[in-house]
Image (tube, rainbow, N blue to C red):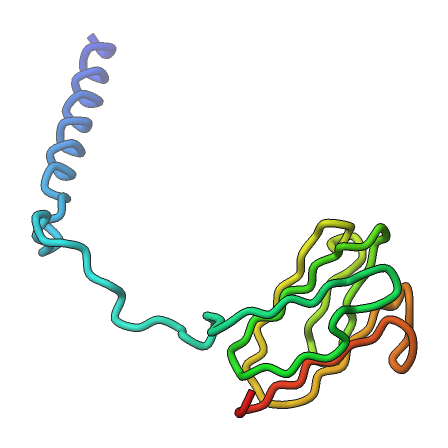
Length: 140
């Protein structure tokens, strides 16, 4: 007898849960399911690049070594060389050799005007070797 009463309790509880969830559709939330979806009220436009420029990491050099861009530009470094490289900067962007093997890409959006030097630690130093600079100006 206890077995059947447990089964009844489980069955009844399941029905209560199912009935409680039955009205959780779009109408219960005040949404008209026939109306088209709306765009979010606000989006973070600063995170979206306004344009893109490519810098190639070739064995022992970045090409071009210097790029001048407007704020909001995404710089894409592409490893087109035969060796691993990295991109190191004192300004918070860069990629490690393990993530920048031949054929890999690294992307960074520059939002603030300034001069941003970078280099490959495998093939250069801060000042010589495989070095490059991104210059962000309001007039680029």
